[in-house]
Image 1 (cartoon, rainbow, N blue to C red):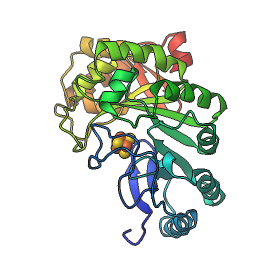
Image 2: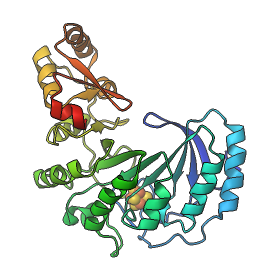
Image 3: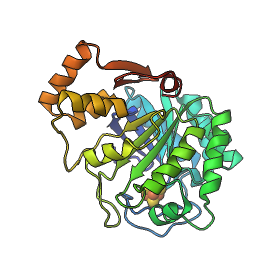
Length: 315
Ligand code: SF4
């Protein structure tokens, strides 16, 4: 779809379905963060998007692309940078909603502006809002996401809490783990204090899976899984699939399977990434005998060894 400047895709996404993307900064990367793991080239963080495309340009391209690809599931607002810096976001969302018909709408944002009431009001009109929250302490945030000075983590966290009160759609948080930076026990403890207060419908935890802007180390799937086990088990956490996991499938005995699922229920996608074929056969046997149970949370099915009332409510 090279003839569009602001529309890209369709792109299949395991998490959101087939997506048609809108790029609100098509010329160059314009972001108020300079994350160590960014898949775009490193660039100085900025406060605003310069030379933004007009709403009319985006809408005429979107409408043409929707005619060309009527089978998509979701229209995704994103940017070569941070989409909430786009100055006409509210008007754009209204215009998208007027043509969206049965399509879902989604924004992928770094959450830096979520405390602003004009941003909350605009994003509240979308079906799904995915906010990045890589750190729970300011020290980690400065080191990993490297925001412009005006961005404040406390405000972001409070902004998410406030947004949850007015937002009726699906709120997804994403944490990208980078070895030694946000994987420390101190950081996870801080996450465990904050995340239960944010009311997310889902928390995706992943690691670097594309070449990053700076030399940082991704985690293997198993390392990621071990970290996820330290999070509060009542949280609706999903391990985001790894495409380049250094060490993917492993062999687990029946006892190991049960103890793994006891610590943290997993989705079938997690299981397919973590367990090798023999382990999946053992898993299926345990499922048949009732030692493993299932629980549906939103559109995800989790497999565990038992779901407490506490988990049932919050998962
Ligand atoms: S917020 Fe996104 S676009 Fe901005 S620097 Fe971080 S990863 Fe890159």
